[in-house]
Length: 501
Image 1: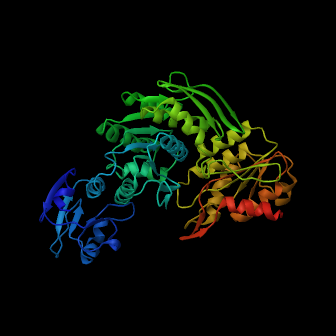
Image 2: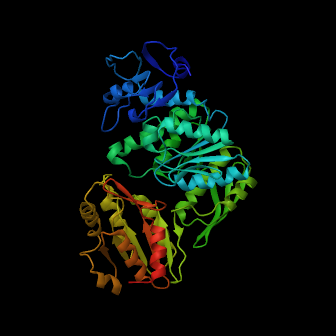
Image 3: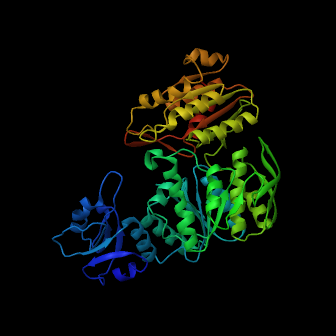
């Protein structure tokens, strides 16, 4: 493809060289460059892509995209732009034939609920015969084809290549999680969104966004720039305070929530240990809900999914049938069967608000005791650690703090941060013997995650509820820079089978 064709939708400040040069591929990693590629020198959080231009040219890059000019000895075309990331998104769109142009696309953003909503919508769209592909936290998938998710929302070059492949394989619709990082970095600017869903906003990623207003602003990019560009419909959960703010700012938003005044709301719903049952009122008619999902916060997720389907003009009958076929979501209150007479659930909750929602759901189920195993990832926002710890301590009879993905951070420092929140609730840490005795409420710190899980399983009595939070569907643990296999669900089943204390 000629460079001039790549630039059709791009804002270019200057081209130094020929616009008729052939481009054989697109790259943002100089190590992956092959002869004839165009290389995008992106500004990163920790580095400037300009320092890799020479390496890209040495490997045969014929075009370099830059925000600031750079003198080069080699005879290559340089394209100067104001926003290299956004330019890359539109160039990728053109290079891969604009794969979402003929697809019905739903983008979902917010702190919590995105993954669950993708699964619900996938089932609804499949029921409607719309052959859905999914881009999300757990994986990138279409039909029987699945790919490991490197990010919740991949870089624009990777995204467009994957969507092009899905489209060629027969995908007619797309459900995509749009993370705040992806929106802030223009990764999805080449996607044509028909519907955008806002779930909620609670403190998360503040190591990147600095404050909640910056976090909220990143989400706004979907609703104020991308949706209007393609005449899309906004779906907003107004049970959330930031959702109410957004609904005032966005014209003709379709609102959902359990509060009065929403366009889509529950007429009657029962939330039990068996799931959620009831009826939801929509502008298109009443939708019957029968779902294995647990908790009030999953009511919000169901309402968002229903609202998105209504925005796509799907009938209540199709939505009802689709929801009935949607099963449990991997790592989202996923049940682990056992013979202990206890309930064991694995969940991805890794923020204070997400954990609070899950713990409150557990309390509503009125178990004999709640045991919570949790941790926090390293090299990430430290401010949420004491918040999560306090939530776990207040909501559990026994809170067991352990390692999550410590990455390159000292695990003991992470646990020290957690103790700040734990000690707001309890005067001191229990010994293993005190925890095993189970008299009263308390907390314990067990740094090794496998040991923490086995200890919690050993304590289970009939009527107890064990919540393992933080990693959910993840089948790995990151220690230093090494990723090792570790799956909470496998570890729990192994502990149950061995029955050791």
